[in-house]
Amino acid sequence: MCERKRGVIVNIIGLAGERHTAQYIAGTMGNASLMAMSRALGGESPDYRRARDRHSNPGAIETDRQSCAGKRARKRNSATKTAGAN
Image (cartoon, rainbow, N blue to C red; front, side, top):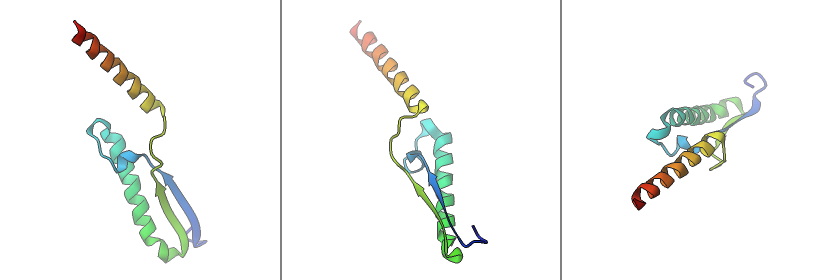
């Protein structure tokens, strides 16, 4: 890209890079670092004319991690309601 002086890098990054949570600290750190890299490279892009770096946070997308977390939360809530009924 530097030699051609053009091109685009697009990073699709999880929202945890903007909304930090201790429960997902590893993912938060990874997402935040990718966002910082995109911003740093994007800031340099005028030096390479048409070479650009962009990132996008598309919002909630159902992934295996989120599906499993949802199942655990429903199970936990169900157990709490059952314990409260006794």
